[in-house]
Image 1 (cartoon, one colour):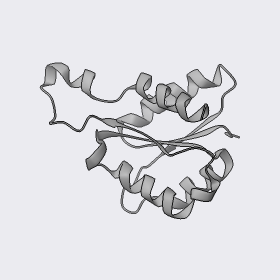
Image 2 (cartoon, rainbow, N blue to C red):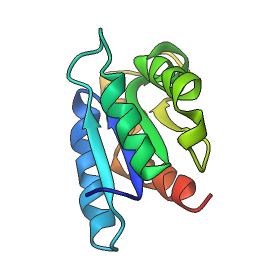
Image 3 (tube, rainbow, N blue to C red):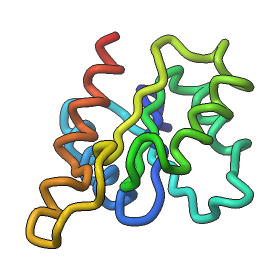
Length: 125
């Protein structure tokens, strides 16, 4: 049972989140990864149940922070599960800039290192 932190992601960021969960597990840190397979409707019941267990959450998306589903997920958690949190809602997203040229896309998109950094920040809050 995952009890330390919840990582909520969708699309390619699920794989990045799973890498982080595996790395944290080697340090006896349990991360529950929720794959949002549907963005409409969002499976808020699963998210809320996980937050109730872990009390810490990071929402991950490829889109810019101001333009993605992650903002809606964070809003749902804030509105309906805020009393279960022991730390702020962490968010990992692409920078709020225009989409880059293909040559630098991998530097612009969030990756496992970005997710791990935010997860550790929230875990150590």
